[in-house]
Length: 377
Image (cartoon, rainbow, N blue to C red; front, side):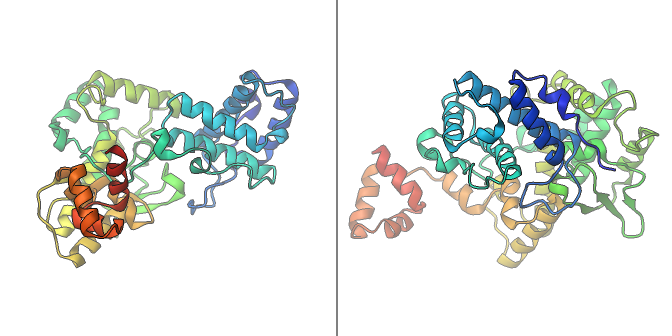
């Protein structure tokens, strides 16, 4: 049976009116574990962690509306004007585009439960991303791997092992197999190994329920080390006396103590996943990933094959998802090239007879970049 969050305890920890709380609990009891994402491929219900994120985001939004002077008697009374007000509040508070989009996703789920599918729009329907400074890039512009930031993963993890072997072995799993943090926590090293095909079957803690198999290659030693630390009750490397949340808090505490933060050594543990996927690309393409900026390029066929294998290893579905880890040659070329001056832009426009598409191509920039240069000039 799927685990269901105790929604009453969570909802009643927020300053909501009794009528709002009661109506919300009824909705959550029926829907809290149901899947809303269109990209999720698993039929499994949501994890307790995701259920709690969803409930807390919805409750927090309703509290904000109450504090903003909206006397809602029930979640069923939420209208588009309320969503518009929330988005503007979040934008004014300088929250990131990703944070706001996540909050809208949770509110969209609530709207779906009430059969109000058109209630919650996308962020771009409420504000201009450009004007609000909320443009997001899904192509890596900087190299987040540990090696690119001067951190020797082997040495640093050995240092961490002296103070917490479990955190260290989870980091080793991330580095060896490109696991996400949650996947490294929940992996059952004994059960996940497919000895016949020499594959590591990653099925627990995956994003969107998208299971995958990763080649073990010569990395059995990492799995053996993880197996020695496996919890006999769950099979994972999270100790029996800690909940997943408690362990996550401890994990980040240990990392911070050893400088593994953006403000410390300039890296996070997620950088190990970046490093692994960059290595996958280089192994199959024969040249370093674009984000390494070596100037070398593979032929189109090898590049396409390498991209496909990076996406498979990452547990994603779309080829463009690889760009977040390895970047693209086009983006790196643009970053290494200084922006055209406004005089060069005007000259290119004159030569192209005012055609912005042709002028942008002549300058080697996108048309959107051309507009930004014109606006700045």
